[in-house]
Image (tube, rainbow, N blue to C red):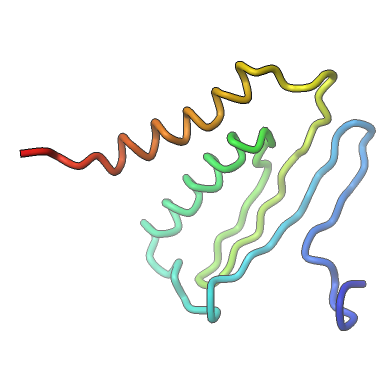
Length: 106
């Protein structure tokens, strides 16, 4: 049990070197930010980018109007990540950000 007898917001299920983690997050002030379908689509896209950046596999998700649940698979690598991989991950995020937020210079 968590604080005040609540269930923990994340759970670990051991499978050797693999862990399945369940997480939940609410919007600020529990506002209904994800009511529109296109906003939920953007949320799912952001979850996929975050999973790739963190090196986890997004196994399942559920997006409600004011919160979402995700299940990710965390696999312990056989050896530490190399410099190439550590540089690739932020470069992908920067590339995505720049391609979606490019300002047109006149």
